[in-house]
Image (tube, rainbow, N blue to C red; front, side, top):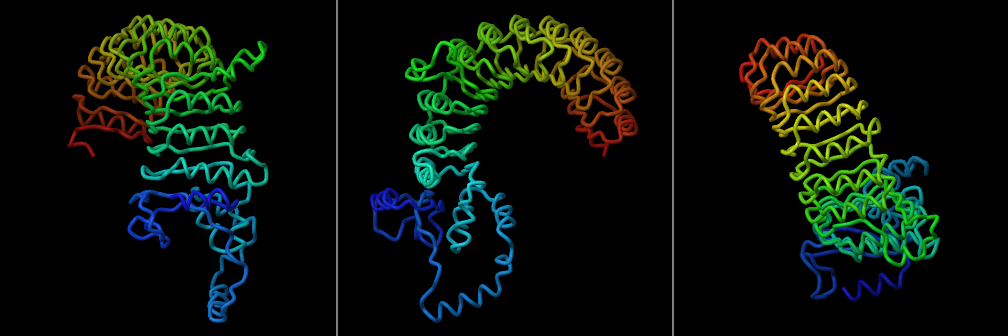
Length: 449
């Protein structure tokens, strides 16, 4: 590893990322006898460009024969670049080793707007360091072309890797680190402070992340006119279990441009956190608070302040929400297109009636596991929401074939219907299929196929 690091530091060459079972490795170790190599680890290596000429006559003869067979070499540069654009980062680095021409094409700046690394064993911190160093070759210390970094599922990512991104990628617009549970608040603060154009941030499954904010140094440097704001519009904090109302307050105060916010299974969030959110983030279009068990009708009253801007809302398994909360949403959020209320057992036909009469442009509705919703509620849906395309009624015990027939007779554009674990006859399912030709029916009736 020490030899590897020295080569990395001394050679401004492209990075090649490959697993240890490739030809350069044996038994998970390099050709050196370094005891610090780890079996199964993906290592970032540095290689100089391939030679332009092969001196040995036999090798030269074989090379000439291969060149005659390689039809891909006849493709023009722009076609090769187009092909390379579909390759993931590690494969693109491998291509850079084939020949001098491929080396030059593989490092074309147009191919390096995105870095995408995957794998639980990859040494992603080192990979990012080597890649960014190579990309900074023409513009020292800055990767001006890099806009997207996706390292979701790379569990070995640490704060060091994020710090590399923050220091070298000022033009970064999209960062996805889903499932990288070793990163902390400080690293995220560095990224949002040093990457002012960052708009899309996915930290889902990063259990140590409890807030999104600027570093203290960045806050001090900002002028009063800047307002200490972060330009993030899309934020996914699904499964950030430690996030609390105070953290959500800080996020809302700094990320006022949010349009998409996902807080699934952030179990410590309450109605108070949603109140903070609505004070600062008035442009939210999509919001998910699924499985936030402390969110109630009072939280729905706060969300309703988004009015016609809200298009997507997920409140699945929020057991404290009843018809009262649905009525707030239906009254003020008339342009709602998607609602997931699965498992909200307090919702009845009255709530569905409010929703159907006020949100007539609804396209997708999930009211599965709502035992108090019956055919009466379906009738209101059918007579008001003609554009409905997706409807889930899974485990709705009060639903019968009559309600489904009313829906099928009025919602001709229905494309997906889930009636699993519902007491629905085969005739009713066939009726739906006749009237909604494109509808895919998910059911548990063995007699219908």
